[in-house]
Amino acid sequence: MKRIIAVIRQEKYEDVKRALLAIGCEGMNVSEVKGRGHQLGIKESYRGSNYCIDLIPKTRIELIVNDEELEDAIDAIVGSARTGEIGDGKIFVSDVLEVVRIRTGERGSKAV
Image 1 (cartoon, rainbow, N blue to C red):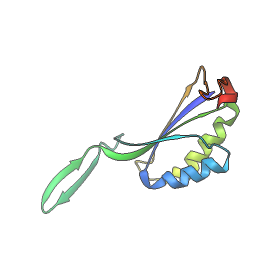
Image 2 (cartoon, rainbow, N blue to C red; image 1 turned 90 degrees about the horizontal axis):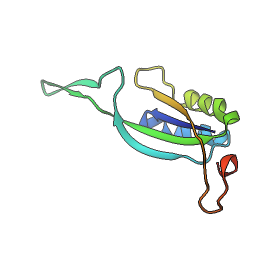
Image 3 (tube, rainbow, N blue to C red; image 1 turned 90 degrees about the vertical axis):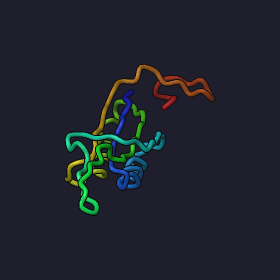
Image 4 (cartoon, rainbow, N blue to C red; image 1 turned 45 degrees about the vertical axis):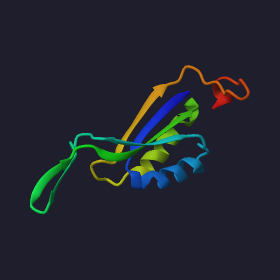
């Protein structure tokens, strides 16, 4: 099993959610976060004063998938979140050693 953490633009969340549902990924956790990458924030000017917004609002989606579903999930996220502009986000993938469904006690891929 794999854990996918995707940090995406807020306005792309609904598109990503629909793409994941279309491939059968129903369970996910979603958080509103702030962060920055290589762009180091946004420089803007307001009434003659320059300022920098160094932490950009983003949406963090976390989901657990079985190994055979990993590439489909990544493709769905990339395909629906990409704008081609800087700040589209990142996807992090890590191994999951165990999953336990609290209600039934099921373990492993049955619990996903």
